[in-house]
Image 1 (cartoon, helix red, strand yellow):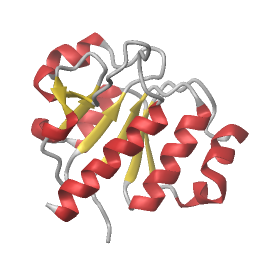
Image 2 (cartoon, helix red, strand yellow):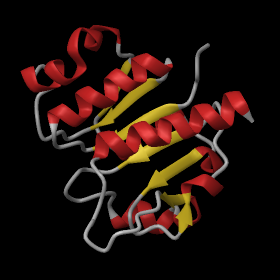
Image 3 (cartoon, helix red, strand yellow):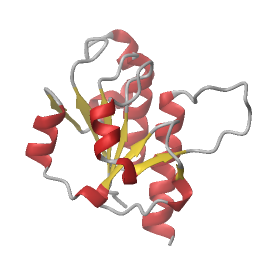
Image 4 (cartoon, one colour):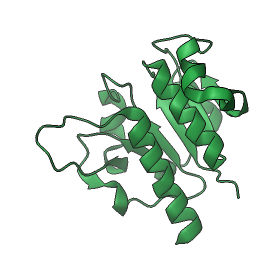
Length: 156
């Protein structure tokens, strides 16, 4: 079973997170899209260590910037799902399909205002019930979103 949805990392900063997300992509048969600049080199040992021996199986597409991604992928706006702790909509109310792009910002900066303000209706968050937590680790949240996508696509 292959899922056609894609995970998009906008300017990822931590190699271990990208490696772990790549491993999730291999497990679920989805593509990993990376938008530059990165806070590391893709050949970094930490990326490969987190991806283990699965890293060579990750289907990766790289883009120099956001506009190049939009121009080349030409996604329908309804298929762009952005994840932000500042979103008001719950991910479990999102409509995820095989053509969806699950988009995550940099670990320390999140997504830029130009993107979040343009796509306000497409912003989602995962619930957090403790005031002691600012955010959830990027690789954990991307994996949770990917499995929610699998649930909606394959088990709805």
